[in-house]
Image (cartoon, rainbow, N blue to C red; front, side, top):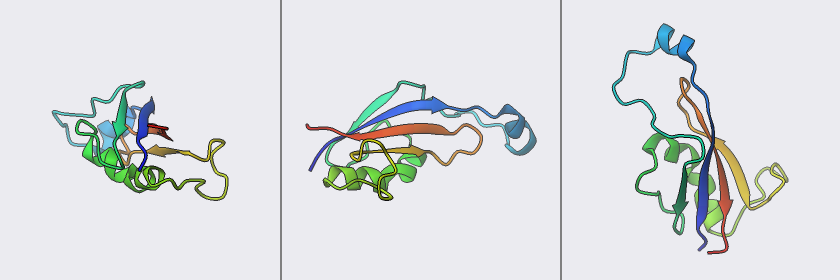
Length: 101
């Protein structure tokens, strides 16, 4: 099994959609661009958001198992994936990269 580096690349913040559709929440996403985690052998990093993990889990598990090249050449680096979390109000885009341990 391999480790997978998870890096928050971009975070959007759609305040107009939040105002129109979202009930106020106390604990909005605290992820910042540049935040990094390491998935050891395909496991969820302890401090990574559960919702973000559910969006990327399959890709992380595949990369950790040595597979990749998703969608026949989607990524320039076949040992990587670019995934966004499912928060429509403040989505975060993550770069997933298999490491050589």
